[in-house]
Length: 276
Ligand code: C2E
Ligand code: MG
Ligand code: MG
Image (cartoon, rainbow, N blue to C red; front, side, top):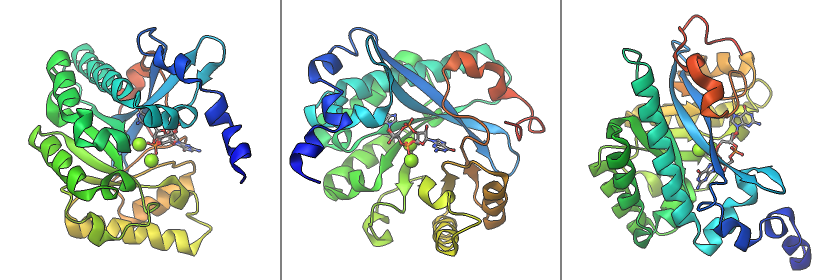
């Protein structure tokens, strides 16, 4: 692709920096929450927080269109801190609204730039936990492979500090980054999230099935969790259950939705939660 073409692409043109810089102070950012289920019991065990930008002129802007701009400009640091606090407050609010119900784990995406030691991620997490009162064990961050392997020494320090806070760390989009397990094995992560591109091939592509199985086997050897992304069909669900994948999320149950729209469905019984 020519540079001109790339620069005129939606991501570059549609997200002027000046607009994005005011998104946090103007209260234009929103979080959608996608349920994460145990594939064993089909009970909702947690949610993933997914950011959206409610732009005054453009409507709801998906993260792919502005997170890269936010990363590039450094605005991701403020945006990321907002996401952490908002997500922790929501998790604490759900726990308070539903006394006696099982607590929901809250998973927050963190970008490569936020993993740089000078970005203040650890402080932002600490601040969000203190201000919300959320139990740290109910919070996790999702970090992509490349965010870990770009500058492994620096990332390892940050991951270790996050683990000292007693929060979970998951590797997002696992299998897409081209890194070997040797590259990743020294990071004390709690879970691997199997990328949607492999899950969508289940039932059709033997190659995808093989990748999915090997990720699950690897995680089992390491004693860590597996979470499959983008489960859309009962066939994919059955295959993942057969391979022993622990957890999953996807349109089969729900896309990301505002907290108010999820409500009691998060706490429904195992018998009901297999339905869309
Ligand atoms: P991700 O963390 O891998 O999130 C999963 C994406 O897959 C979400 O897209 C979700 O809506 C979508 N998805 C979930 N289930 C299905 C399914 O069954 N079928 C299909 N076709 N898609 C499904 P979304 O919300 O557009 O987010 C895209 C990416 O943006 C995320 O990928 C994550 O990398 C990034 N992102 C989202 N929120 C944040 C945030 O707060 N901070 C940062 N740094 N990045 C974020
Ligand atoms: Mg994620
Ligand atoms: Mg992912």
